[in-house]
Image 1 (cartoon, rainbow, N blue to C red):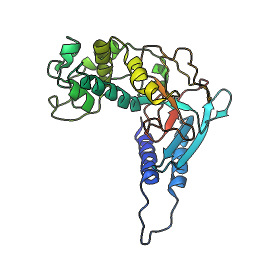
Image 2: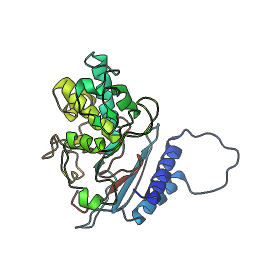
Image 3: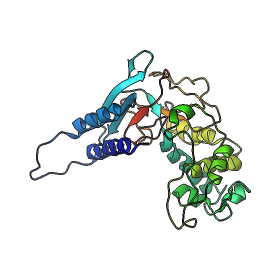
Image 4: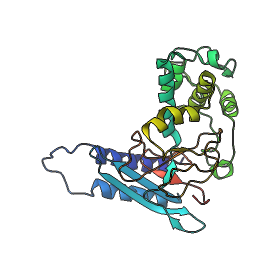
Length: 291
């Protein structure tokens, strides 16, 4: 992600904070664009960087919603981005993974202080990486020191975006790098690889893929029937009120969760996602396939 795109995504997130913050009486403030107008401008700025379509939505504590869209959802037809369409959850799905892990800990099926080696012997090895010194707690808190080596989120995105990797392959890529320059638990560095390992541990502990445990433990009990596992599908469902499964949505490879926004819905406060890393206040579509 370029520094310019990161700047505008951070701006959008800042607007989200303004919109969701409680209103405090002010003495005299200079006139300027409203938070809603700032959200619209930030969305336009992201689109101007070359992102084909952008959707940004903020839901305030009192239920008020602000949404801004820009660009197209399908470059083949020119269909505009919908204000209530589906979008990728991306890293926001880590909240779901962490919830399942904590539930398993409460059930006595794993310990947060258990090591990665206990569940995945010899998987985290090489170039200074040592799974016997890294705990589940470290993975959850991004303090393991394991490098973030997921492919497809660089300048080669367009060439790599349809590649499919097994979890073991992704961990293997990370093991070709030395860990961060701190011991496990003694520093912090964001690691998608750590959550790939948590997915693998969930499967070892339950006998089921992590996405199945998320569905059974979180989505189904809370009635979040518009949040779906998309498997390896490169496209998104059309805007629909139906909760019928989408073909391939349960495919057990790669992280591809999607959710839908619609008036009155608040699935765990999550409102964004994408097929590439984006701010938690915006959704970016980088491909031209029908969604």
